[in-house]
Length: 92
Image 1 (cartoon, rainbow, N blue to C red):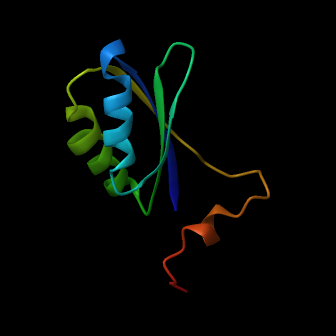
Image 2 (cartoon, rainbow, N blue to C red):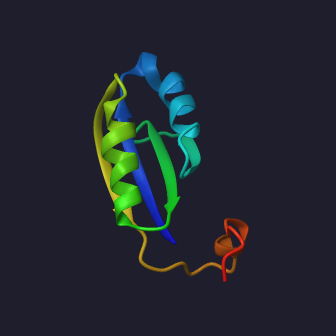
């Protein structure tokens, strides 16, 4: 599983609407409005880079009101929280 964090700067009047649209995208597991340089962060959990690229470039960044984005990919999880089992589709 691939985990990515997509930070977005958006128009102030679009924050809630964009956050709601992001949360409806398959593969986007969490969406937070936040303080700081970026307004929204979306956590994406997908099987591979092609799926990530499709979500970010073909879905997310086409939303009107997004001004800037930064995508970071996680290499390794260091917490004890087992996300893999939470998002498992029953494949072994």
